Image 1 (cartoon, rainbow, N blue to C red):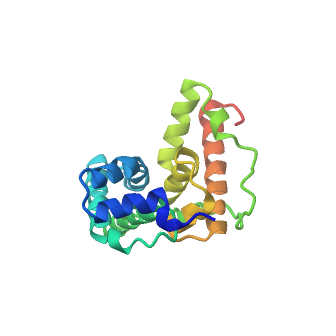
Image 2: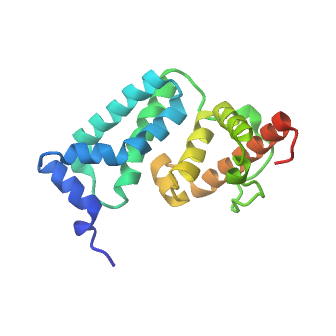
Length: 192
C-alpha cells in the first residue's frame, strides 16, 4: 500500500505550504481545467465562472493546510470548486436540478442504458446538437456529465466532490443520458 505522506499530491501540498517558488502556480496549472469544468458547467456565465475559479484557488490557498490526504487532491479541490459554485447558484436562487423533469426513474445502479455519448458525437452536426442539449440540462446534471465523461472522474470521486451518494450520481447520469438521447432524436430525427 502506498504511503500517502510520499504521494505526488502530498509532495505538491507540502511544497505549497513550504512556500517553495512556483509550487502554487504548479497546483493551479494542474487543476485549473478541473476547476473551470466544474464551475463553468454549473454557472455558465463566463465572467462569473472566471471570478469563481479565482475564488476557488484563493480558498484552496487559504485552506490547503486542512488537506489531510484522505482523498485525492483532485477530489479535494473539486469539492472546493463545487461548493463555491453551489453557493453562487444558491445566492442567485438558481435551481440546481430540474425537479419538474422527474421521469419516474428510481435510483439506477447500472449506468448502462445503451446510449453512447462518444458515438453520438461522431459527426459535427450531431456533436453541435449534443452540446446544445447538454447546455440545456440543469446545472447539477451538466456538472456530473462533465466530471464523468470529460474529466473521467470515477463515481466515488464525484461523490467526494459533490457530497452526493453514488446511487444519486448514477441516477442523474442515467436521466441525463435519457434526456440527451431524446433531444438528439428530436433534433436530428435519428434514433440515438
